[in-house]
Amino acid sequence: MFFGHRFRSSSTHHSKKVECRKQNAVLRLRLSTIHFLLSGENMSGHSKWSTIKRKKGAADAKRGKLFTKVIKEIIVSARMGGGDINANPRLRAAVLAAKAENMPKDNIERAIKKGAGELEGVNYEEYTYEGYGPGGVAMMLEVLTDNKNRTVADIRHTFSKHNGSLGEGGCVSWMFEKKGLILVDRAGVDEDRLIEVALDAGALDVKDNGKEFEVTTSPAGFEDVKKAIEGAGLKWSYAEVTMVPQTTVRLSGKDAEQMLKLMEGLEDSDDVQKVYANFDIADEEMERLSA
Image (cartoon, rainbow, N blue to C red; front, side, top):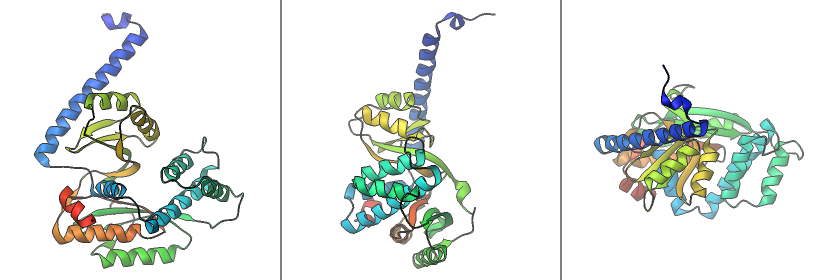
């Protein structure tokens, strides 16, 4: 038995598939909005935290620490995958992050050469640590260090100081999934246009969290989707390949305050590249505590 669509041109069939994907995404968006209103779910706290910090801007001291972290990432990326940004996706992402922070071109090129072995440099090693924050919040840390013992001691001290604890490997990693996450402000954004642009570029999903649109991608498709969103004139407040938690832990009061102090303490370490956590704090309280 033959159906009409089998006689259509491949381009027409492709258009139908794209349209179907868009319609499905619109349906998912409507359902996720309803789910948000019923459950009060929102993006994880570390994403909120990063967004707030970005809006506030980095002080000179913080910018210096950020440069140190980005340079380390460039060095390790070049060491592991070579100094050609076109053939090394991780290095390309690190260089883009450096440019987004207005790092001087000479600094970037020097870091690449150190990683590729053309210049002498420090040998950094990668480690992942897991633990718990106040209220049982699951946390993961990505670390680059030239002295593991020093770094572990510092991390353990920071956890203990703010009512957290360093855990065993694998204790919380199963709660996270690596994805690209792009947050687009809802103000002035045509949601159907965003869905069309994001899906055409390869996004996995678009969800309305009540304040912003969350665009999720595969790690490999992150840059393509981000470029497409920027190319459409849509502004994002947060864009990163990150560890997205499957569930979140709602915090308030003293737990919320200690959680943000723990985040600040860990991110203040030159050796800690990224901190992921599944806490959720109300926007108003987050803003107040981060002031």
